[in-house]
Length: 180
Image (cartoon, rainbow, N blue to C red; front, side, top):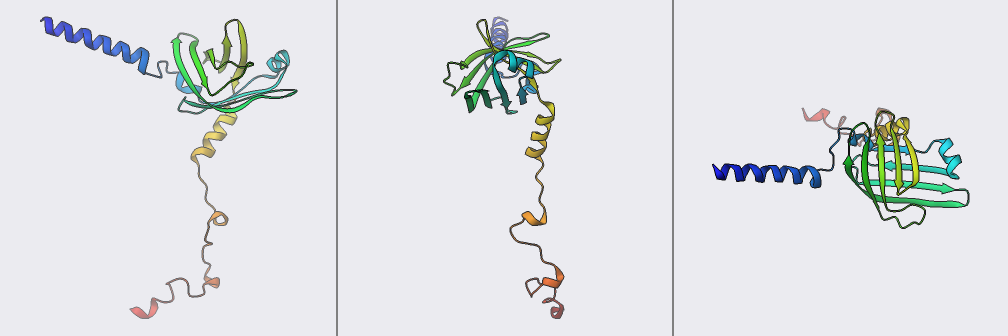
């Protein structure tokens, strides 16, 4: 009986460790983080920036961030991200690391709040907000269509298809008639 209790305790500890340390996705909404995120015009005006855009790959590990002010780009870099969910409910809170960013204007370790009901992200550190972003669903959908939909037309082939009038003995169609 004591052995059964020890095994159950070990299973509970192993599950807790997996759920809190290893598993990347806890909330069902976390998988919706992938896609294009943009700052609204009102936030851009208030923050003195021209453009803030974030693209998160569906694997939730790779991203591209662009931040531009009037005097030039602050960031325009691909980054690896590490999102660790720290709280969930109506909103989901994450600790986020943007690996590869060395900027005074955008720290590489931040917190992120995700509002799934309105597709809104807030990136902040301490009492400073670095970005308020909304998901650009049209751009995300277009990117996914282009990513998974490979279209091949006759002009894009390396070797043009043969037309019967242009057949100069390259096809086997006329050569096999006498072999019957």
